[in-house]
Amino acid sequence: MNEEFVIGLGQQAIWVILKLAAPALIFALVVGILVSVLQAVTQIQEMTLALVPKMIAVIAALIIFGPWMIKVLTAFTMELYTNLPNYIR
Image 1 (cartoon, rainbow, N blue to C red):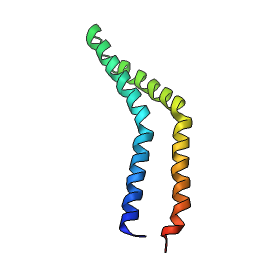
Image 2: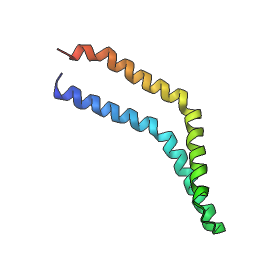
Image 3: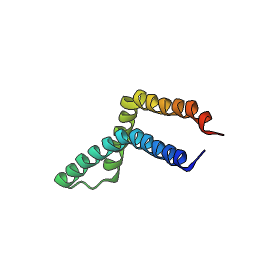
């Protein structure tokens, strides 16, 4: 196992993590902006009003994108297990 392989594997792992986290983070960001605009317009400064919709949005994102996330993670794991014995020498 050489340096290039380890660095490449780390880059692939970070890319997979970013792809898996992106849908939930984007949903939370959009809902957070909408709630912030709503709070600014109505001048309601309730903390639970900001938290609960974000939690619901993240759960919805996980339900919607869950199968895709599992597919991406499974493909990465299968590629790792398939190619790892070739580099361990």
